Length: 358
Ligand code: B12
Ligand code: SF4
Ligand code: SF4
Image (cartoon, rainbow, N blue to C red; front, top):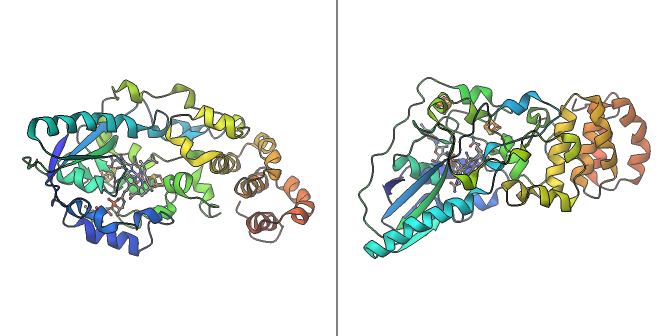
C-alpha cells in the first residue's frame, strides 16, 4: 500500500478525454459517464485529501500462457480462474480504512471498480509501480501481476514518491498482442483487445478479430505474461484468491455443452460468471472455430439451433472453418428459417466465391 495526494494525477483528465474521443473505449459507455469525476478524485469527492492505493499480487506459478499450446482447451485469464477479487480486496481496504477512521477521525471511502476512479495513474503516483507500454501497472517486485484498489480519505497523509517508467526500449508486450490492439506504446484501443471482446463486448465479434482470439475464452494475459519484470514476482499467497485448478485446461467440447444452470454452477463466484452463458458460448465457439480440430465440428453443430443469435452466428462460423463442406450443405435450408440478420450474414459468408472469415 502506498499513498498519493488527491491532486497527484494532473495529466489524467486530458489522457482520459483523448482516449474517449478516439472511441477507444468501444461500447463501454460507463467509461464516458462521470468522466470528470473519474479523472480527478476531488471531483468525485470534494473533501478527499489523500488516496491510499493497494496493489495485490496475483502471480501464478509456471507459464501463464501454457494453455495457448492446447487449441482444444479453453484459456481463461489468470485473474478469472479464482474467486472474484473485488470482495477480497474490498475486505482488506475496509480494515485499513477502519483504522484510518478510528485513529485519526478521518472520513474514508473504499473503491474497487465500484466508482469512477483511475486506479492505474493513482497507483503510479503513489509509487506502487508504473503504467507500462501495455498500459497496465507494472511493479519492480510483482511484475504485471497486481490487482488494484483505492481508499479515498480526508486525512492529510504524507505522500509516497511516484514510481518512474522502467520500460526502457522493451516492447515485448506491444509485439505479442494477437489482435494488434496498441495503436502506440501506452495506448490501448479496447475495441481490438481480446479482454474487451470476450468480457465486455455484448454483441457479435467482428470476423476480422476472431482468428486472433485463438482459444482465449475469457480475458487475455499475453501482454502481461511477456513482461520481463515478472521474473521478480513471487507466486501469490492470499488463500482466498487461490487458483481453482478445475478451471485450468477445460475442454472446449465440454464447455460447448453448458446450459445456463451448469454455466452458473461451474463459474459461481468467479469473474467469468459476469458474461452470462450466451456470451461465454459465443467465445467458446470462436475458440472451437480456431482450434483446427475437425472433430470439434460436432460440438458446434447443435448450436446452429441455439435460441441466442450470438451463439448461432458463431456456430455457423466455427462449422464453416472446421467442416466447410458440411456447413455449405446446410446453408440453404438454414437460411430459409433464419430471421436474425447477423446469423444470415454468417451463412452467406460461407457461400463459395464470397469472402469467408477462414
Ligand atoms: C476499462 C478497463 C479495462 C478495459 C480497457 C483497458 C485499459 N487499458 O484502459 C479492458 C476491458 C480492455 C480491460 C482489460 C484488462 N484489464 Co482492466 N480495467 C479497466 C478499468 C475499469 C478502467 C481503466 C481506465 O481507466 N482506462 C481508461 C484509459 C484512458 O486509462 P489508461 O489505460 O490508464 O490510459 C492511460 C494511458 O493511455 C496513459 N497515456 C497516454 N499517453 C501516454 C503517454 C505516456 C508516455 C504515458 C506514460 C502514459 C500515457 O494515460 C492514460 C491515463 O492515465 C480498470 C479499473 C479502474 N477503475 O481503474 C481496470 C483495470 C485496469 N484492469 C485490470 C486488468 C487486470 C485487466 C486485464 C489484465 C484483464 C485480463 N487478463 O483480461 C486486461 C488488460 C488489458 C490491457 N493491456 O490493458 C486491472 C489492472 C491492474 C494493473 N496492474 O494495472 C485494473 C486496474 C482493475 C483492478 N482493480 O485491478 N480493462
Ligand atoms: S490483453 Fe491481449 S489482446 Fe488485450 S492488449 Fe493485451 S495482448 Fe492484446
Ligand atoms: S513488456 Fe516491456 S514494454 Fe511492456 S510493460 Fe513490460 S517492460 Fe514495459
